[in-house]
Length: 112
Length: 492
Image 1 (cartoon, rainbow over the protein chains, first blue to last red):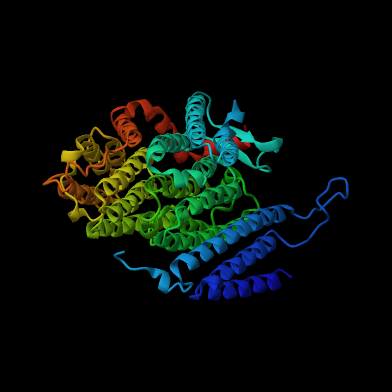
Image 2 (tube, rainbow over the protein chains, first blue to last red):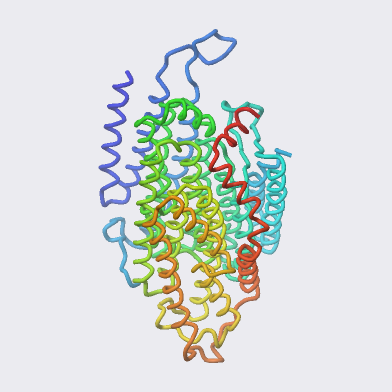
């Protein structure tokens, strides 16, 4: 199961990297979102997939599943959600003011 | 007493939230944010004295004992940086009061500065590596807003790149965290150090360490600084000063903490890489500073040179070099903030940013000119100003360790700094004045207040180096002997 997950992470990273490297701004932002999903799955897998019982002392007496990766992922999801939302707004404003969503055209002139 | 540790993080967040509701009361916003920063400064001084007498303090949130819960750790190194960051921000606020303009103030400028400070202080104080990531993100989100606030064409374009680079860097931080957690199964920094020492830092852990090195180098501007010159030139002056003083320094702090506490064992690989990166950063930064034609790009490349120089201290890794690195870090935060404020003011009074198009500013603004001269001397490391102690100690450490290459590069960079800043001084401050008496814009009093306060603190760190020496030495001792830190957390 772990190796299957790692392959999935690899595929997601490949897709994300492809999108990040493109010229279109909205694809780049989607790429960062895909990348963050990949890393969330990676944390889940690195913490060990479900091996034991629910980590509640009253429910069973072990061995327990490590619950920490879920907590980490939850935090990371919230953060990447906020960042992606901010990025989308910023990209929209940039598109409105600069009149382009092509990163090649957003390079800017050296003397401006 | 140890509940005080959390205040440098919690107070700015609470006041920032309150300030959001006081959007129209600009004067009230100014007063509250100033009081907040002064309050944090006082608390940090108290904590620093306490740590000096009683050793490292820690605070376990909701009573979860380490290594299980998230915790805050206050050692001298972290507190010195919190103190310097709070002092610099307090002084920069005076500049903001008179210069930032009502438009920014109404668009929540002060709340976001406070959020930035909360993130910076949290990153310095946390003892949990995932919490470090969270505090980094708090700081970065505030910085994204501050860099884009204003919404000019160029500003939006550059801030978009800044945000994208940092999103990718944070992504790599998470990858490094995942692999670290998969290998050592803990996130508490002291506990990681113990586990890494037990495993003897095998090649897998060294790879994880190098992943962290890449992440923090992106944040600190160590060799991977390609994003820095563009994005530091676009925001308003006071934001530039805060960025130059705080953001890269948090990356440097994280690097020093990671490679003295968590991964200190495989030094001939990791510290060699850091040394090479620091040397290349110095060379490239010097080339940028020499090639720059406008004051902004010269100032931003000076930030990069500073980063390279501080990390020589880490790469050399003797106690003298560490002490020097801490001194230089404090100096660099103060001096770079002042440099950026002065550069912004030069642009404000002359309307030009190209060095050759300005002339004779010192005739119109003598005090302003001499403060610039003072910063120039401090950055070049001339005694008795603040840069001197750090440079001497890092040099001493490099000689002890036989790193003559880094020593030569470090001191050659001082000369380049002197040359690049002196060029501005000679061309822009001396000579015939280009501003007629009628067109002369007065420099606001608030700006002068922050210039003078920062200049005084630069002189104080230089002349009064003995008074802060006890804390700096204590900080360096803890960094060089990670067992002090580990025992305070796991056995306390």
